[in-house]
Length: 184
Image (cartoon, rainbow, N blue to C red; front, side):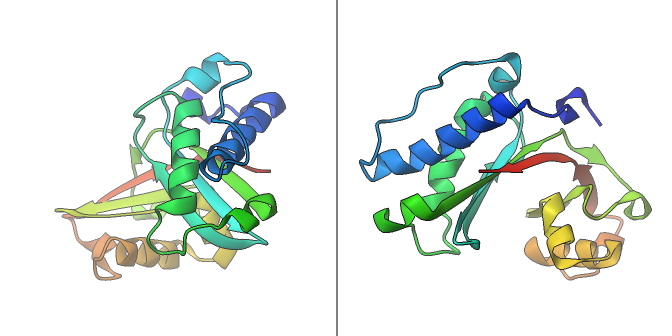
């Protein structure tokens, strides 16, 4: 995996959690729009990231960018707000829920081609693509559900809108990534 696999420092993690939380809170007028208190090379790096929003441990949204599109600190602020209010799988957050939030950030490595045999559930995230169908599951999803490699591949294919066994089709592209995952 690439150098972006290096873990963020405790201060960098805390800063990203703060930016995510305040980005959501500013939508409600609870706090001003967040600005970084400090920037490091890691926070300025263009890397993929996902933000998951939980209220009392119930997932309420997860949005991110698998491909780097902007500096990490901006990606986190933008995707935190999108996870809270624009993930159509969930009801948007309400102001009364903001103090109850737990934010989970997944900073991604770059994607690399992989064979099904090389996938390690819990270590790798999966991205499958066939034609216009695309699906992604973060590494912690396999751990959370205790999935085997095959179950993880099936679930990622289904998320892409493909048959569960599409990972066996030579037209299906299988890519893996790793993530630095932290909560606050």
